[in-house]
Image (cartoon, rainbow over all chains, first blue to last red; front, side, top):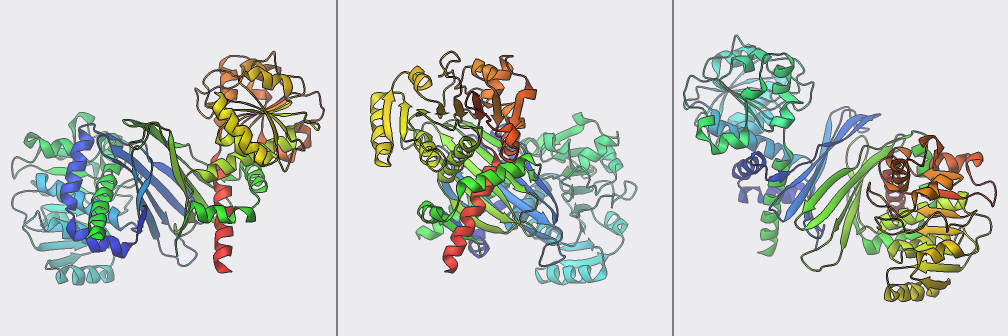
Length: 320
Length: 320
């Protein structure tokens, strides 16, 4: 029987799953060519302005396929704020039966995205993190930090945001969960004081410049997921020792790697794929001197993995 | 609040809607360029063999967008029979809120497809239909006939099928709803005895030949929806007076028109689009001598229209 779950029900089982491990396994399957992931479906709306993305696919040996629908509207009838919504559908292969609909309001997208940040840090962050830098004090700025907790032994944070109010709220929230947070309105301060940096903004022009980034820093750039968005000076990628894409094919067309290729400062051959980095220690950070960059644009295999894990947790819960 | 409806609930409100009118209005909007319909999304499965199609889009001035997911598996774990399943999702523009999920098990696809057959017959069938010919005694072979009832004044039917058992069942079912049914195992008989013919098979080679089709016949070919499937001898299109596509852009790539273009016997300029035929009497049948062909490959605007109509009927029902 098909089951429908709302956000409260989904959140209630999250502690039973291991998102970081699930996402790690997903990236491995993806880089090993064990997934079938068609191009992203897209609807663009002019009035009211917004967009809908359909990400879908399956892992070849799995019993399920997953379709995620995620929307963003910039001026909803109810408010002038950005509204995002969506759901995940898990179907049984062989019959097409809908196993479950997860009405997660995009929450699981935040979880799988933050989990990818932790996977990246596990293999690329320097051994000794002085201070974690968070560029962008929004939802992902919070969740990336929470997910780093299990892989990075550092409680000192510097956060950059658009304004003091946003940063004050961020500081308050993150200190509640055990971090020591300094804030700044100058993105340069992040580069100067942090050697593990996560950028999580919708910026269309670089926030970090190549001159300021300290040698040995790792940067996870997860804000850019379109051909236009851009958080890093392309020369940061030019100077980096290791450049990792969540999906090489996707990063050629969108994200920081796309920007650096377009700027002519990066050769395709230098890019390695996250799933390969996870399984091959030679592709991981091997010294504290290396500067490393991970470009996360979001891959459907993450949605597939998180949907399956949540479904199993929910069904297990219902059975008990 | 999101609502989920199963097939029983959906069927219970069908008599409150006017599928033929809804589909007609949808085709008009489509041909007038008032819809946004991206290319069909597709997943193909090798083991177990099957496919999933995602059809989606919206009418520009509407308050909703619709995503339909439909699957077909050829060897399900439970049986060796073909299994189809699917659902329709209706979302609110401006917020992305899921207004309803119609778990119709593909039934509404059958309805919107049969309704399109009736729309076509309304504008292209000869005034005097001697006998209706049905090629393919499956679900659509039944539903096309039921939907023709309101637009064609003829109760005499000849049906072709794969075997006697299938045809006996078909005859029994259709006589129960008031038709006089003769059956045949020779498709040629249909061409010889009928001047309104509907082909509804998954055939990959022509079932009707050009020599046998009587002058003045109308044929609705709705079985072929892929680049490979083919029910009509391409020369039938070559000799026809009016050739109608549900979607010209789609029929260039799949269906009977695609086959005739590939065979080099049809010029693109001869094809007219159904939405234009509906509004322009000059494009409709104007004499009993004309031979007319409609190629129906299935367009997302039909799914959009039927989903909206059923949703409104369901919500109205719940309010009362």
